[in-house]
Figure (cartoon, rainbow, N blue to C red):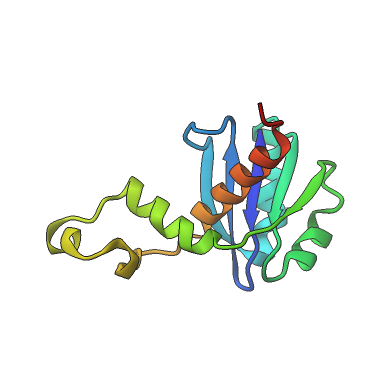
Length: 133
């Protein structure tokens, strides 16, 4: 299993990915100061083999806080993950009513989507680690 983390100034998204293409084992958002504690809980709950940390805001600070967790930590380019996370959110939660007629690129999710960004970071890490062929 891979733990994806989308680091941020005030909050971090996380997602535990068992296999690509399957729903995540767990997904959520936690305030940044509480992230290390939540990661500890996830490590006790799931057999996490690696952490995929997005390269964005506060990645260095988060990496330093997680350096002693005992699991390999890999920094992953998170280019366009927020944009793709928004699309993924609306795939999982299609707009209803009049909003279904609005182009999805113009819609904003009703809640933060850092957890979806973390899922995409984990999937990107797995895709890069999997040999093509």
